[in-house]
Every structure is written in structure tokens, then in C-alpha cells.
Length: 284
Image 1 (cartoon, rainbow, N blue to C red):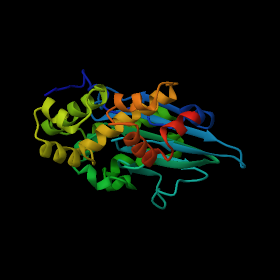
Image 2 (image 1 turned 45 degrees about the vertical axis):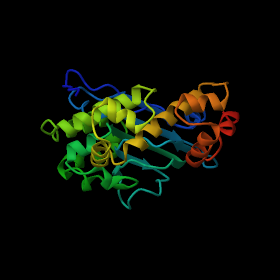
Image 3 (image 1 turned 60 degrees about the horizontal axis):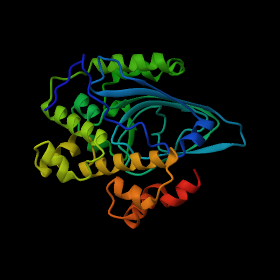
């Protein structure tokens, strides 16, 4: 099993893909990401921000494929997203198993920490399955004394300063070494990096772990099963290739990323994204 220290942070465990039609998105919303600092990089992938300012008669639809990650965010704006708990701006968003759609209107900004898959569960001692498909007040997950400074709108106006403050708060939560979390990190990093991994059985064999044990680990730390994570990463790869200008056949693309045939891919793609792969490519 891999073991990492502050000096040697884990390899990437979260895809930077997932925003549908990213060029269109970038016309309306400014997105920035910065890698997590060394002291928290074992549990936090990055800190990020969104900012927008649209005329009153305009709006944009932000659509993001789900990731196996949780986020701590401050969300401020003239048109709060409906999922936010009433009166809350500092929230934890768990793994979303469906496409994440938000209408972007007016002016607003979001600053956030993206935890590594399993990172928030390891820090909090809670099961990530508790937050799957939920947005909850941050104080339900993390200690309130650490959170209070992060609610400041003035601090949130400076994404770099907010990210530094959030990372400083996380350092107070750093737990004792957890072999199970280390195992999850190693497996997720492998799933993301190795595009030849297409089945849970292959993952279980490579990492010498029983499929049922793998299922329990992912339920506790990530909040979803290993099959779901593997399927989302391969879908991220496939959509990113289309967005980059792929002009081959959809059948070849399906086979490359583990679908039996074009029909199988089309069913899953349409269920998640809302249009067929061919239609998505035509609207690129």
C-alpha cells in the first residue's frame, strides 16, 4: 500500500474534467483552481473559486458531471441556488450522483475546498454516505469554532486568502494515520490515472482486496461505490475527449473507455448528460 507524507502528497485523485461545454461556461463564469498546500494536501485536492456578473436579462446554465468528492464552500450572490439550506452560506456538499445543474444569474461568487475522495470522512470521523446527494450546513460536519471565520463575505471576496484560512482550519483536524484511508487514496488515484481499468473486479485484483471489502471502504470514505467512481472517471475522460475535438466514431470511443458497444454508451450518456454522444458533439 502506498504511504504519503506532507512532503510527498498523493497523486491526483480528482478529475479536472466534468464541466459540460467548458468553452461556453468560461464565457459567463470565471473559474480558478489552486493546489492544496502541503500541510493539508493529504486530505484536500485543491481550493477553487467561481465569480460571475451577468446582466439582468441574461442567465447561463452550468452543468457539471458528478465527481466522487465533497466540498466545503461559501456561496454568495443575488440568486442563491435552491439546494442551499435556508440562511446558510457555508455548506458541505456531498457527492452528487446525478448531473449538477445550476442556473447562473445576477452576480455572485463561490469559494471552496475540494476534499480528496474520502478526505472529509477521514478528517471528520463521519461516514461520507451521510452527505451523498445532500447539501448540509458545514457545522453538521466540522467543528463550529473552526468555521466561524470562513463565513466572512470580505474574506470570501479574496479567494486566495479564503483558501489559506480554510486550509489553516483543516490543519486542526488532521487525524492519526488511517490505513483504510491510505488504501482508498491509492485505489482512487489508480482508477483516475489508469484508463485500462474498466471493471471493479480488475481494481480488486490489482489492489489485492475483496470486492465486498472494497464496497464497504468506498461507502464509508467516499460515499458511493467503486463501480460508480470508475464509471464517472471514464465518462469524464470520454466527454473531455469530445470537447477537445474528437472526430472519430462513437463506437470506437465507446470501446476505448469500456462500454460494450455504441448503444450501451448512448444509454448511459443520455441518462447522465441528457443528450446522445452524437448530439453533444454536434452542439460542441
